[in-house]
Amino acid sequence: MSHAPHAAFDAAGQESLYPASNASTYLNSPTLDASYLAGFLTLQSPTVTVGLCVVIALVLGRIFGRRKLPQGVKPLPRLPGLPWAGRFWDVPEQGVDAAFHFGALHKKYGPIYEWKVMGTTHIWLETDKVARDLFVLRQKKYCDRNILPAAMGVKEDCEILPLSGYSDEFKKHKNFIHTLMKDSTPKTFYGWPLVENKRTLRRLLESPERWSEHMITHCARTIGSIAWANPEHGNKLLIVVPDLLKAVSPAGPIINKLTFLRHLPAAISPFKKFEAKRKQLMQDAFYEALQDVKDRVEAGNCEDCWSQLYLAEEKRVPEARKMDWHEAAYAIGSSSFVAIATIGGPLHSFFLAAAHYPEWLPKVQEEIDRVCGDRLPTVEDMPHLPKIRATVKEVLRWRQSTPLGVPHEAMEDDVYEGYFIPKGAMLHANHYLISREADKFPRANEFVPERWIDPSYPSYKEPLTEFPNIRGDMAFGYGSRACPGVELTNMELCTLFGALAWAFNFTSKIPKEDLPWYEVNPYVITMSKPFPMDIQPRSEAKRRFIENECGDAGYVLKTKREGKWDIVHEAGEKEPWTWDGLSVPYEKPAVKRVYPEGA
Ligand code: HEM
Image 1 (cartoon, rainbow, N blue to C red):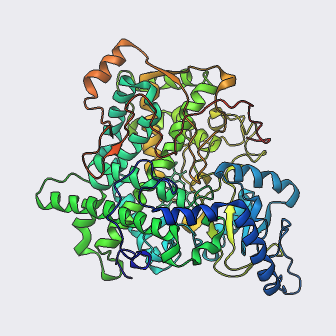
Image 2 (image 1 turned 180 degrees about the vertical axis):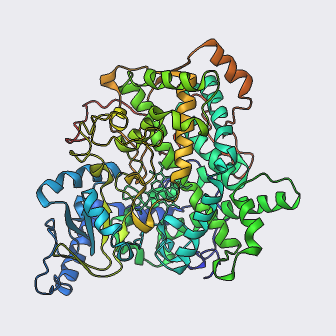
Image 3 (image 1 turned 30 degrees about the vertical axis):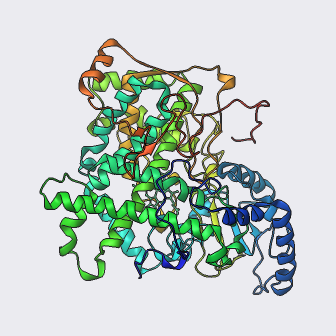
């Protein structure tokens, strides 16, 4: 595998790397010159793109008809559309809207049906049974990932683990990550999450109105410490995540819908130019962080972390499983940046649940006070805190971080219950709908943590010292591509929810009818939009505890750039920081949104 920094996409006369902008979108990136922008805007024009699509559809429709199937095999129910181009006009932009849209269609088309767009067959799996039958019981056939038009070359180069195609390289990377997780889980991720819990309490005490920023900061600093023993490396992740997340989302650049645009030559493709810069920045982030650990290890002053573990074990690993510098830098970096938006999702939903269901928090606080008294909860307390675990489990069910999971691509033709599934089809498990299956989850659209600890609910399991827990939870996907971050998520969410409930009371500052309900960012990893919350220490003793025991608050925003990886928020405290559009505050719409049944 070549480790040259993406030479294929480098345009001639490339400018120096762009400063880590906090507002770098395709339209306002300082790196795009006027001619690229003009070309890009032309491509964004609906008239031009619709015209282009119809012409291409008619040509390709004549070339590729529907395939002849073997006797007894049926085509899947299919949404009507143009030949080849399918229903390209019917792609819901927002991640969660797609989940609602396809979730509603399942009533008409059944638990598995197909939808064609731009020559690709998309298959929607709308029940847990179908998702498990395919992704778990037949996992070898369904463990590839799809090509991502805007994130060019990402499937093939096996650098970003969640998006890599299935290959021996991928298996080596995934084993590597499993080993890091396995070795650090019993050591409670070297205690880093508990260190950051205290800093987060301090920030909330000092500037409660910035709670959304504090949650995102918490995730970045925690994973920065676990991966590289330095929370400040989390800044690098905060900078690289937004562009990548946009690149892999339908709500990102237009090339994700008009996929044929990926064939534009590099010299005239604004997408390729942007992507080359995005990749270079990511490589700098991962290389610099690993190099910093190497320097500290050599100086004999590096604390425990994944990178230190890699460097210590490197020489002992058998040749076939060895990860070179580049591979290790990417495996660690790309598994770390996933830990911010995904865990940030349930953290935001915790505030949303506290606002909509104020009666639940006092029950959790009663449990924590009884078990922990005047100290913060630890991992060892968790068997005795079923209400905290139920809160984590229910938040993940009620508002998924990834409402449509991550697509799996079929590696070969298959027949399921008589229906044909072609090689190359993209299969989407509708996590949103699956977590609302009526027989398992009565009152599914409500936040009901009791369903995990009250025997009258079908989801209840004993013993309560062990259940509920999030191991094997559908929120983390299925089969051989399932998420390796479950234990870390469990520790981070259980201990931080516990610390928050121990320390503070949370009350909405706006009336219930004006609160957001299912308003989230438009990307494939979603977070509830923040809204004004009153956050008060539960007592003077707790306030003093936070002031005395939780020293440095660990803010990350700066108002002026001093270093390459500074996160700049020029508005200071005047305006909320929105993480490049990933956590834009909720604004009450003129007409209240009507949600589909189930949301
Ligand atoms: C609330 C927290 C999280 C949720 C809901 C979540 C969800 C998911 C989902 C749905 C997938 C795709 C599974 C599939 O293809 O079926 C995934 C994959 C992945 N997740 Fe997570 N995740 C979370 C946290 C984390 C954390 C903390 C890490 C690492 C520190 C992580 C690392 C990964 C990686 C590396 C993959 C790719 C696995 C592969 O493609 O084989 N995730 N996650």
